[in-house]
Length: 202
Image (cartoon, rainbow, N blue to C red; front, side, top):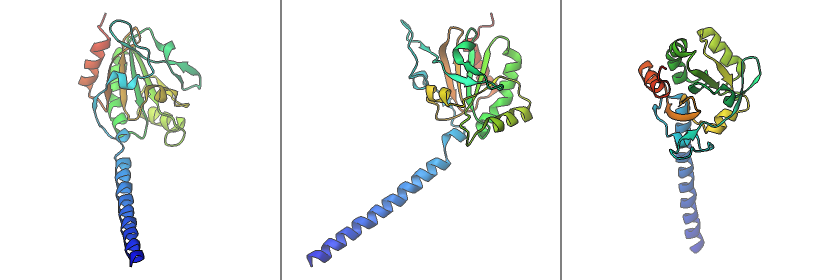
């Protein structure tokens, strides 16, 4: 009698465990399919959350944009620090990301207008599987975009900034401090508002 009762209890525990496993799997699967990196989950970014590896400023607690290494279209190494001297728009993107592609026409317009005043740095998340240098270049070429594109072949940039969702844009002043950031696709008006934060027109 005792053993039957024990078997019954273990049977119930097993069934509950199986139900929990199925529910957990469905939850994970749902979240994977709704991965925010491929959707437009727009929001302002907390600067500290994307620059945890940065060195803070002195009195006003400004955050210095951390350095990283990417590659240009000719395969040359490019350090982010070497691009300083002007205000910078740093954008993380991939060709499979719908929201990334949706904001690029506006970014092209901004580049044509501000390209000699602001450094545009478009970092492609080139992981070698979901995104390759070839797929990224084919997209850029076929779309006619002329803003500078760099390839994060070693995922150094994405790792340094803790990028988990794209598009992500950071707006950096001429001294190399992060002024603002945005997660998701932006409109032309939003871009201009952010640009006004880092470029005074002087």
